[in-house]
Image (tube, rainbow, N blue to C red; front, side, top):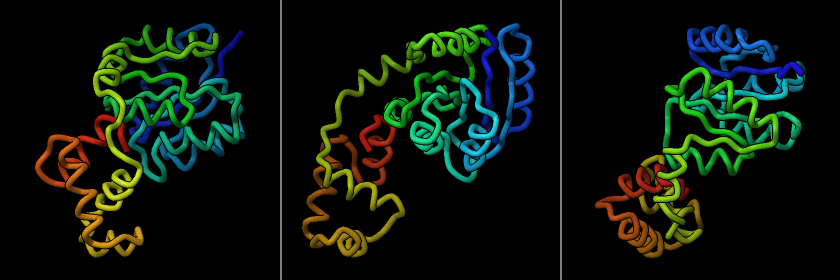
Amino acid sequence: MTIRLLLADDQELIRTALSTLLDLEDDFEVVASVGRGDEVVGAVLEHRPDVALLDIEMPGVDGLAAAAVLAEKAPDCRVVILTTFGRAGYLRRAMGAGAVGFVVKDARAEALADAVRRVMRGERVVDPALAAATLAAGDSPLTPREVDVLNAARSGAAVAEIAGRLYLSEGTVRNYLSAAIAKTGTHNRMEALRVADERGWL
């Protein structure tokens, strides 16, 4: 059986290299290649690949958002996240978006080919070191409201603006921010946001 593949990466050189490598496998066929996240769903619906290999950082929408839409609109297409960014937070978000594989780009070509075949057999495939880091990060200690406030602070908004956006008092926003900072062991809200992102708590 030939496994039909879609590649999505904003770097053309990487897309071309991956396509060349994967086409060397007798049972693979690269049927589509796109450079933007907002092109992924349309290409999948048009070409009907068995597996979509998605980068995370792409223009339009990121690979994680594209994966979530594919889970709804093309559930038969298995999604493997292929990325430079081996972060626990990305892995948690990828799995939450319906991805069945997560492979870092510095993996050997044989490992990627093996991952594609394994997801076609119904397995989940995750880089072992990243899986260990994700488990080590543990479950989120943040409450849903603390998550809301941290996400609202992402743009650098002032406390008053966050309060208005979330229909909270300024004092309540400050309390949530202080709690998030304490729980992440950081010194300010931007550090708290970074740590929570990296650990997949947002």
